[in-house]
Length: 312
Image (tube, rainbow, N blue to C red; front, side):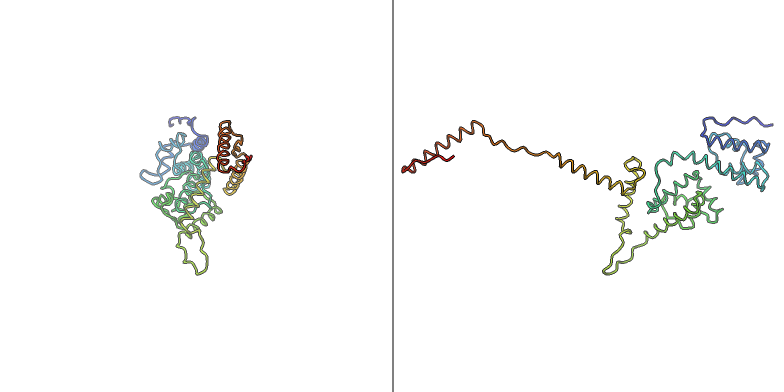
């Protein structure tokens, strides 16, 4: 009789505890020790082998075990090739993905890029990385094995370059990655359309026809403006400046109307200059009266024939 198993970590996340409890349930149903389960996974130095300590750690709930370890645990808990084992593997995969999604949830904060915003290899790599996180962040080795099993192998180095946005995937590579990330068939069609759009934009534009017009979407300046606009929209959505139920165009229209109202208010309350006071000071009045007297005397001396009347 083996040593009693340690209790599930009480500080673990709820879905991780559920995974550990399910693995312990499989062990109890198989009525086997971890050493026996380890022997059923194969012999040492073989790809599918898992040691007794590895299986014990997987069922403790202290950390999220690799998916391959969980599947090996489920296979070892039953008769190989039986329908019950296949059901156990499917359930174990489902429970593990739930725990993996719970683990990466903090990294999925914020709103990801929408498909219409993906226009470059870099933005496509960013979107695929987010899909990888939603799938539980499988390792690059797991991605290589999963894509190989689906029919088109994507090596670890190639997957790293694609998700890093350094290279653009082929249609076969994209289909294999989407399958590895559990993307539905309907959503996969949309992502293939994104790849076609990026490849089309990367092609050199045809020479303009004489007297015709060319499409500006392929212009690098236009592409840079659209990407800058998308980044601005993402920032404004994260900061709450754009309402959840409105588009970026709605936000711009709302800001334009607000600017128009502000301009009208500024015009209404604009400061104006007070008219100058037409009343003169006493000094100015005295100086003007003295000048009139002197001017009248000068005119009378120049014209002795008659008096000069002082006009008002």
